[in-house]
Amino acid sequence: MIIFSFNENEGRISSLVHFDKFGFKWYLKIFKDEAIISAIGVTLRIAILSTFFSTIIGTLAAVSLMNYKKKWKKLILNTNQFSMIIPEIINALSLFVLFSFIGLDNSFIRMLLAHISFSVPYVLFSVYTKCCNLDIDFLEAAYDLGATPFQTFIKVILPQLKNAMLTSAGIVFALSFDDFIISYFVGGSDYQNISAYIYSLKGTINPTINALSSILILFVLFKIVLDYKKLRRDYY
Image: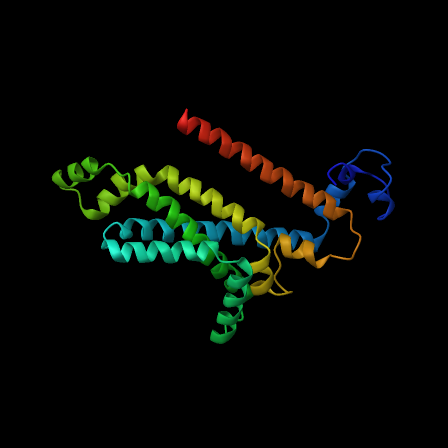
């Protein structure tokens, strides 16, 4: 697929079968296709906004969870994990029914809320693990020096949680960017991200999709390499 995405053959069918000459014809056509540009815009808007809000909500939830009693803490964590392991189709159908029941018709808001809902549990799990290893001495020193709870949170707690927040943000961005099932159910035919748009072209022949899919594959590989280098830096 990646090889034939560079095929300059003029025919839609022949360009997928016979390699003529190397070129970027189908990549350039991506930027001329309004449907693809729209899908890319939707994907990036939803991924960026859902990552931003879910990171904030998940971090605040993880920090506040430290003050809960053990039984409530265990209940919340188990509920959080349950939402991560149930099949995505169940989440999609549940959100579709919920949004229909409350009469939420705005496709952008529906998709954004849906992505936040499945992203927050990952942030909560990742950041809470780090919260359990916070250096209490720094917190006590901050209070002894007269810092308010807000100042302690901003200047002492958040710096210690920074790496966990960035890691979880990277995870939920990738999940949101690549999501299909939930986006397909809640977005509808009038508001499609990249995955839903590619699925809508099933049964058609469009070499541009080879180029678009190749870009997505390279994006994922680039993200994996960055995360691998970050892990090596953190642990070695």
